[in-house]
Amino acid sequence: MTWIKIAAVDQVGEDEAVAVVVGDLKLALFNSGGNFHVTDNICTHQYAMLSEGFVEDGCVECPLHQARFDLTTGAALCAPATQPIRVYPVKVEGDDILMDVT
Amino acid sequence: MVGSEQSLPYERPPLSKVMLSGSGSVDEIQIHPTGFHIENSIETLFGVEVSSLDANGHTAMLKNGQTIEWQHCVVATGGKARTIAGLPLDTDRIHYLRTIADTLRLREELRQSRSVLIVGGGFLGLEVASTARSLGLSAAVLECSDRVLGRAIPPVLSSWLYQSILATGVDLRLNTRCESFDVRTDGVSIGLASGEALSADMVVVAVGLEPEVAIARHAGLSIHPGNGGIRVDEHCMTSAPGVYAAGDCSSQTHPFIGSEMRLESWQNANAQARLVAAAIVGVPIPPQTAPWFWSDQFGWNLQILGVPVAGLQYHRRGELGTADTATKFMLLGANSAGQILHAIALNSGGDLRQLKPLVDSKTPCDPMFLCDASAPLRPLVRAALTRTYTPTVS
Image (tube, rainbow over all chains, first blue to last red; front, top):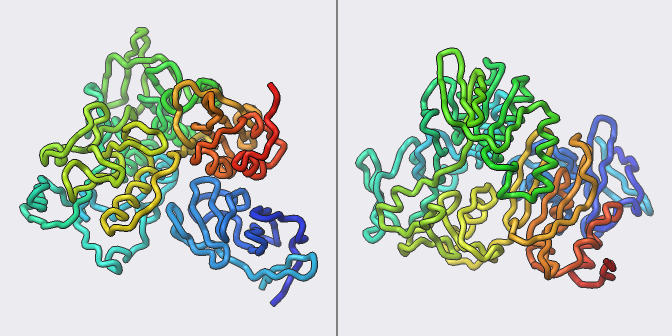
């Protein structure tokens, strides 16, 4: 496991999301109900940023066509998406949000 | 499931967009992963048509002579593209767009053409024009009404779209009626009322959808005289017990709108499918919320929530700037009670989603309060929902 800091806790408010770039990875960092999640940022349905989507109840809705994904498992929960998004391990240490980049 | 098309069920929205501009196959736009129907014991008959329905006897006869007995029947026959007499079906250089077969044929011809005339400036015509332009063709769109998308958006947005579409190089003609057609082996010409004739290598006709309701009508089901759809109640049940209708072919009193209509949208098809399924298995589900629609065209994502009820005043959030991909704005249409019943987002679907609880609940608010584009929308919506805001003084 290689953990790197990607943001500070106060950078992402409740039910908010920010885009994060780590190397070649375009990622989205979510705060849903106080829990942090990191996923690929590009929707598996069409090119849209999930970091601009609607965050609620541990899920994100794509802003383009409202495909919904589970932020914990990455599963596609409703049409028009059928492919899951990739999720990455996240942990919080103090004020830092860390993700595992291995 | 009996389907007249040969393929597994697929999504139609991509047919005017990525399926037309790209080189993918229908496999990429299937609604369910391969194997889904087998795994769920759903028997499928594709390339097969129902010829008649016996609503009382609970049977359906197929064109191949086979009879199916059913407990519940769902008519989800959608519709066919409305045709123009002078531009017949199955004719070289003339295209209608409804199915994957239409898309593949259209795609092939677009690749070999330099110019296309598009009859109809609705959502489909504009999306086809957008795709054609992206492929390098010159495109003209002929629209008979005085503004684009007149039944879906307010005039201020029609104006913005008109200017923005012209700026992409599309020859967009309003108030334009096609009077004569000359279909030749080397191209097509259309004569306009003004006397001008426009020519192109090919023509795409996008002048609307006729709901497919012949089987329902012959079975004695009630059909709406105005919109032509199979009339259904709030559970999508038709006038015949045990027979449901859903999607483009159905006519329903929408709970958000309050009047009976036939809605042609991906979201309505999905929402009504859920209503039918819930009714069949006997599970109560919440009624439909505000209708939602999207269009991807010319690099923009346009989303519409609710309906353009008469008498709405529109308030703008964001600037109606030039149409590059950085432009984003919303138009909030509110009635005199302050209920936002129609909201449109350009390149800001995420914001529209934030607004949804307010629109769905028809909570009266002060729309101007929501229009400060520098402030995040979510807290403003939350405040409006709980009515803990200070109304702006006009």
